[in-house]
Image 1 (spheres, rainbow, N blue to C red):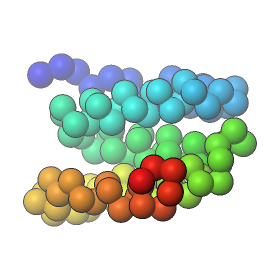
Image 2: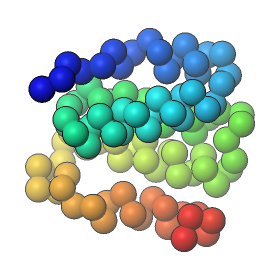
Image 3: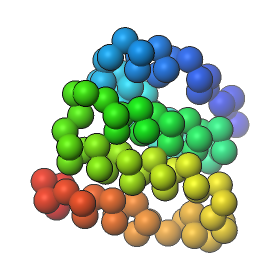
Image 4: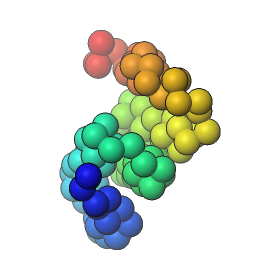
Length: 102
């Protein structure tokens, strides 16, 4: 079992500097970590990163909508029953908001 990575300062620093790509990359890394070792801390950080991305000036309107919906999903994951967390169709509905992703 590997230790939980530092979930606080790295992506927050990128967000304040206005760099979208490192924040997006860090969020994807956290999602990969979460897939291997689910944790509430990772869920919360992923949700906060998605909220930051949603408001980022370099993000398209379409991606902003997806980030907003995903942020709400990740920030409430901890309250879902465990069997619902395993359902892959939950993430698919967010992609439906974008014709570009279909």
